[in-house]
Image (tube, rainbow, N blue to C red):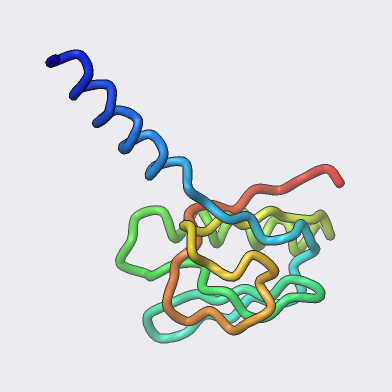
Length: 104
């Protein structure tokens, strides 16, 4: 009985952690620092919130975005599940989970 309960809890937790949405890979068109947040715009997409200055991960996400912009390489941005998968609407509420430079 205990094993079954543990297994169900494990399945619920693992499915909640892996629920993410990736915006289409594209080149960085613009980066806009604001008072509390940093926004990024990729080619063919709308503005997305990269992060909040109070989060420790925001400087590293900004660094990746600046490096991709300078090199002209495409990036992949990941958001929590429920985000607009096409990244076609202005996102001013949800921070990116990560940003990665791609070789494509």
